[in-house]
Length: 514
Image 1 (cartoon, rainbow, N blue to C red):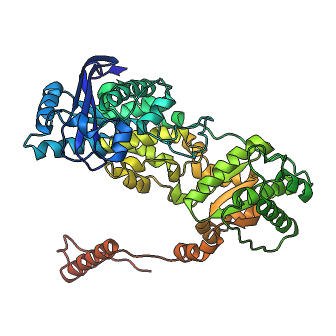
Image 2 (tube, one colour):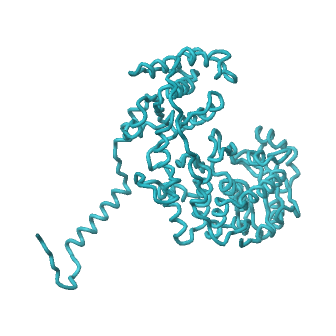
Image 3 (cartoon, rainbow, N blue to C red):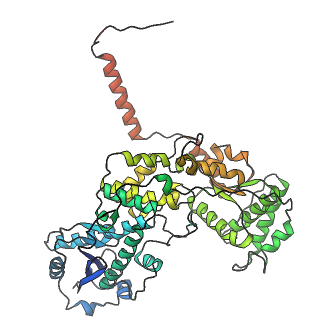
């Protein structure tokens, strides 16, 4: 390991409290740290002429009267600048709020921005938890990510005790503790963590000064776990609709923590009858029916009894994620069954393309951050589809994420298994898993443009069916944008110029025909 020592050197973590999201700064708090130790603290209220907003007063327990005798904004910023000096400056969601607000305030009173290196612990949280978010299914190792990357989410995840939030000094102290906990995770001796640290250092990202940098990267095949082997049990041949109905009634296996709903039971009965008898059945399910459970459970039981995969198709990502969470939840209630999420190949990460990035020239800072996030994600994701990577909080600043999603997508159907990465290919494993799946979750576009799923699934439940026509129109249409047209016209102009004015021949040309 090649250790970096900046983490031991002094850095400042700060937080601002403002009078509403766009209001004046009313408090500055900061801690001066050397690694895990806090050497000094800074705290200052700030006078403002703005009346205190009700929500701000409730969150901070501050009042107009409490700010009357506080320092002016200029005086508070001058004192804060003396406290910081040229040291690195760290804030949680700093690039999204605190740094911008601090610079705007300094400019408003004629002061220069603080000169030190700036780091955002929200970006560090993406490195540590690339799948953080509400409603996420378990990762490939059976763990579940935090529900978000807010300071309190991270503190709760690390089981850090804290008292009052939304006071600048308290939040700065807690950010420091969360920072050290995340650095500890990032420094773990796991292939994915070693690869993250190597990439950050290769791109000379400022966070690489806080970590232990390996001399060489691990192989990507050591980062991505092999897919679990699954098989489908022999079909039971028993699909008893009355037994299924009882599961939705009071005291039923599905109602331990749910309230029975008559429309839900009636819909489940209708779905079960349609699956059993064949044909088509159209159901209008009003809000509050609990439709997801009403069609997923009959589909699972029918697949168990018949040995046939049932496809479930949706239009929106939101509903698709809800179905996956429901399937995971049901495994605890009705026993183990197999399910797979199958999308078009462009939705999946291409592991070989990702590995090729390591042979390119050293990345810039933002690309290093994005690649490091992705390299931990491929170690965790159970599906490998880009929707499972949750980065919207920093996509606006680290714009390379969108480019990498396009650059590192699967372009072609899988060929024979020749390498260790082929064995781990997410698109390949999704296509292969459908053969042993009880439930295959699709989107409308794939349902329409691909017939691959029909090889294994002879029954389909189409949710959000009113969107099917729009999905078909979109999936079967080609669009040409202005950028493409401009490029096409430029290429045509270049061709015409070269045709009119061909370059001089350097020697005789020989053309053979037969």
